[in-house]
Image (cartoon, rainbow, N blue to C red; front, side, top):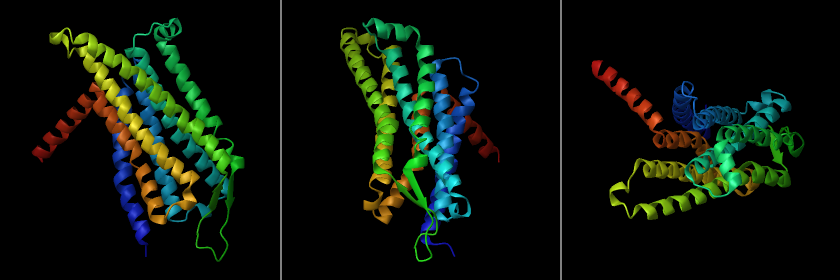
Length: 297
């Protein structure tokens, strides 16, 4: 008979995985046919990363909850851990990439180097994506040596492999995989906020043009970056707690934090959908179609 914890995780997975998958898959479907701009490539990559992250989280939680990892070799558990860490860190770097893109597109710089980067924004985005993949992969390869995986003995309460992470390595991993892109995102948001305030100050003299389309796009981009930053701050805090102070967390808090990570990809997808007019229009058309079908039935 399943335990209460297993029933709880079954409910969480049934709710979180389909919602997150549908939301992010819809972004993938939209941008597979609209890959003309640099922003489209970033959002497509973010959505694909979220689908991978959500699937890996669901897979890992299912295997841990029902003690299925013990049926496979340690190398299999290690490989899943590396790919899971990669997808988590790549998600952070994708938010930083989107923030850098918005910063270069929206802010009028006077520095010649930044002006040059603005003119070569397609190259900058492509390079940032490649560097993000490289960093996210390289910093997680040492997991092979930094994680000890042991089998439980007959008297242990654990029915699966026991993972013991090296604290020094996990600190390094979190700094370069989560904290650094978080700082990049924060800097970009700060620069965009200063630019937005200056723009508002200039537009005060022209009340009729105060809410111009340009200002509206600035505000929408800034709101998207800020919401993604807040969501990443929550993810960063949860991720750090789960892997740095896991032993100090109670069983209930540990379960709540892990279940919270399942809804992060869905939150990112909702922020992107409401932050991009193209995605919002696609979702409104889809909802209209479902509404008409329901009425016909």
